[in-house]
Length: 158
Image (cartoon, rainbow, N blue to C red; front, side, top):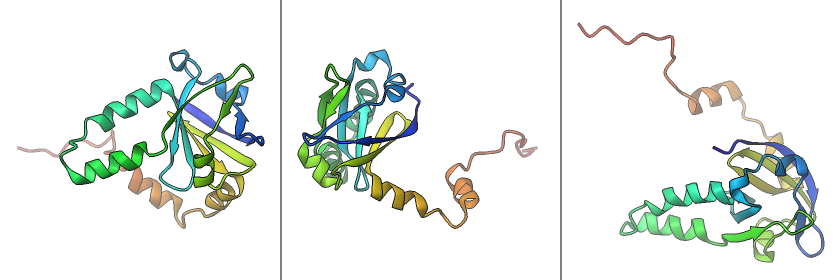
């Protein structure tokens, strides 16, 4: 399982290319073979998936019942803009112009890597997003990470 981590500040050149930071490239599995899929994020950002991670995700998406309208709509929007990319000899990725426009990305970006993906944000948008902290992060963590306490014994059913 891919376990990417880190925040990286980068610049996009005039042709829409970005150099993948070496510290991030080292985290990409050999199975990805320097190939990626870039796609629209759920918010106004882009998501870059190493190819091996993308294959796992599309297996889940492809299991959806396409006779269900909501599923079809989700699949259409999920795949909208998805583009296969490969690193060139200079460790650069060329992003599609339409996706850069979607995410309002022009020059300065943040690559935010976690689990199996790399989010690509316009630097200003990312900084605004990350300065709006939840009022009670502990409460949010409790709601999101709600798991049974391993030290809790099951209730006696006798």
